[in-house]
Image 1 (cartoon, rainbow, N blue to C red):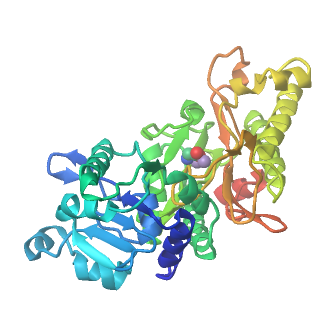
Image 2: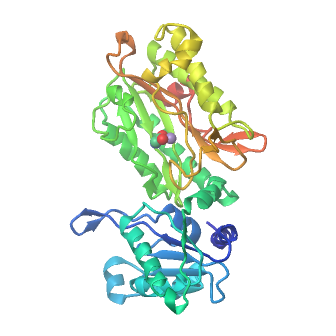
Length: 433
Ligand code: GLY
Ligand code: MN
Ligand code: MN
């Protein structure tokens, strides 16, 4: 991300907050994996979006109109010994020079300094509920200022969640954000293609996962955006299967839902294909049905259409197909109103995509599905899942198909960012042969 992007975002947010307000945005906490070992740290998306700062234990404070500086960063100080053990630190000077903070203070001084910054402000923008310890500290700081009211100090008395205005900003992607997501999608495509190329019966699901991660990391995506789902046979029918430990068997479908994260931006891609490289008749019928639902849903992605239009369209196509295959019986209208498809299609057709894989942004405004607009990015990911039983003929068992692409809303309609990743039956069979 170009370093100009962050001050631009802070300015926009502060313009919307208005003077007399203050925003407090802590980064994510560090989590212990086992004893002295931590999970890899990833900054909180809201915090990173506004600061570009990647080190743990930091709090950003935005104070529009403050004469002595509007952006204050509390962060770790430089410390030669700690840096020898645990890695480099930007330090306070670096926070100002590299990240554009007007003031930087040691994170250990937060409780001493923050109450003073609240004085005279009317409104606090802060997102409650992410971290109880911080929630309590914020309340404590306000109380501290309020206790001084007899000496004429004014304490803020309005709490506003940051999510509304900030997440509305994050929903509309800038050119640079679109570039980052394109890159994440591109890298994911290399992984999916490699998985199709190397897949053969007798391998394990985790070996396929290793091929994906290899491709992600060697192209600069240091982490997947979420734990990869690599499910074969019956596992393809478990929506969030992540054990990835079974052997791949000829005749089974392999469903891979895996996306790289690049520069803190996610991709989210699913492809489903036969372990042996050739679809059986039943697998192909279901695959073509999901694909036609997906293509029809993607056609609904355009400015002015509602968020739910792709989902409604996918449901219609899937219901028609299930009727034709004899898997559902009844009248189309009633099957749709009864949600009969939900036995085999139990999730929605997509979600926003951005820094978070299930990204922020409201899906409804004033109780109505919101309209799609230029710069939004969403996934389109219908599927059908047939675990054994459910009154189904045995020939359909253990077929789980999902096809997921990442789609940008453009002025003329949409751009499927993942269009280069093979998804036609013939194309997949050719690649695997
Ligand atoms: N990878 C989770 C999802 O597709 O939403
Ligand atoms: Mn996915
Ligand atoms: Mn998804």
